[in-house]
Image 1 (cartoon, rainbow, N blue to C red):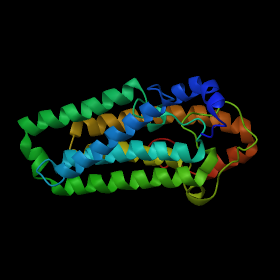
Image 2: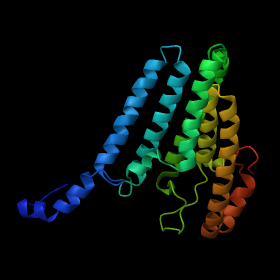
Image 3: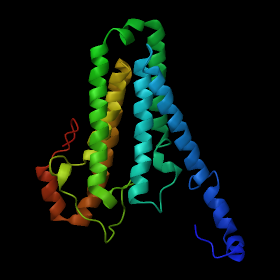
Image 4: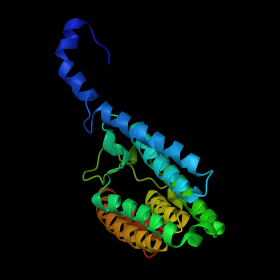
Amino acid sequence: LMLAGPDDYFRRLPYIQKSLAFTKAGIGSVAVNAYLLGIGVGAGLFLLSTSWYDLGAFIVFSSVFHFTEFIAAATFHPHTTDANSFLINHSVAFSIAMVAAIAEYLIERFLFPEWKQYFFSIFLFGVTITTAGQIMRQVAIFTAGANFTHQVAEKKKDSHVLVTVGIYKFVRHPGYFGWFWWAVGTQIVLSNPICTIGYFAASYRFFKERIEDEEEKLIDFFKDDYVKYRQTTPTLIPFIK
């Protein structure tokens, strides 16, 4: 922020105060979210060295996911990035799902500890799926570049282009594909049988509705070009053509 002098400072003081405030668009809120996610990574890494390694991995995966979402938004849309770009408060359903995952883990940990401690191969399988989903989503986002947004675009901008290169050549909506398997994978990491099924079903419903809504806009934006692309490129999300 460049200031011409004292008069300019006082003239812009309301803007400066607002930008530093603890609102969704304020630096204060961004700093708090980043700080808490950093604590999450540290706590998760510590738990990885204990018998609670599965919970530690879940915390690390979750913290990294939210942090990278903010980084992606800040990279391509710096003027509209705010605390919501972390996607921590993505939706009520998302928050409930996270609470449910922790609750199931803790209940089963104390009632059926053998479920959590004697199936290390399941943990590794979950880590593989979650890591692959995270990588896929980030590759998709950075391939799309400025075309990537957290919200479905309602109007076509001059800068909008139909991305069909890179990972998009093989997978339609690869960002959603990555997020889907990241979500399911985190529950396999925790050896949560109920939430694994629940996350699969909820993610399927969410992305099915999201893709249907988004593709209506994309057909309107790109006409036959998108229709042809959709016909030849799968989503690879189960049961979503």
